[in-house]
Image 1 (cartoon, rainbow, N blue to C red):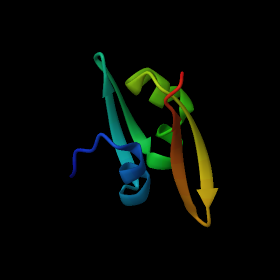
Image 2 (spheres, rainbow, N blue to C red):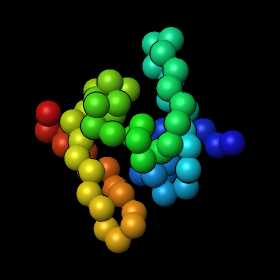
Image 3 (tube, rainbow, N blue to C red):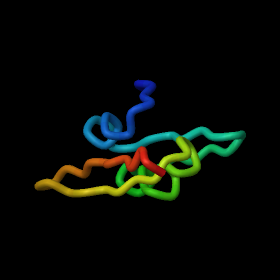
Image 4 (cartoon, rainbow, N blue to C red):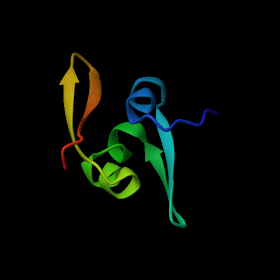
Length: 64
């Protein structure tokens, strides 16, 4: 078990994640839950995901 606040670390390290936000809990596969919609809700940022090889990475648009 590890606590992370950097989604890219979770994408790299975890097969499954638990997301907590305002009393709402989601648990499941990292690739399914670490997505644009959840990152917008959790961190109030716009993001895009890219794949390089078999690894996904989150890119944040800090301008929005």
